[in-house]
Length: 190
Figure 1: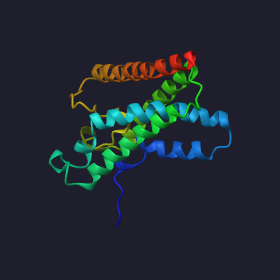
Figure 2 (figure 1 turned 45 degrees about the vertical axis):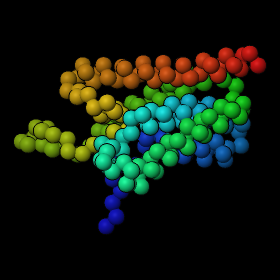
Figure 3 (figure 1 turned 90 degrees about the vertical axis):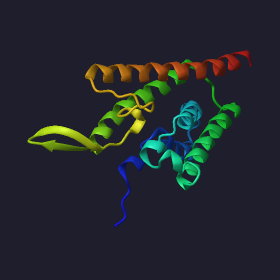
């Protein structure tokens, strides 16, 4: 019987880009297309870079010693490299009127997807109970890295989770801000 592991569902930001590409391509509303592209450019470039720097496939799909022998690793690196290229092409196209409004919208959408991912990670987890008491979680998804951080730091206390989520939120806002500022400045000069 065919089985599709839940951690391979297209609910990661990089997988969602495929849907956004289709929406941007087939929408006839130019303003909506600009909004989609303004969201895609930073998430493709920054997300692709982060994925290549911290490849999640090495703790979900294959081991590090299979890095050069598994087709999945080539697929992973090629796909994320193409996303970076797509983001740079969107930027070079000069079709977007870069503004703080798009920055704000991008941050808010990523925050919303992060919150949704917490619930999805919980829904798709496989908990083990003994006498009605949770003893372990045997399988989990890690959409948006809200379940397990990509650095492998153990988080066991509730305050550590809150701190981790706060750090994710701050890093998201900061990296996107650093991405948008040069684009807005360049546009103002032109």
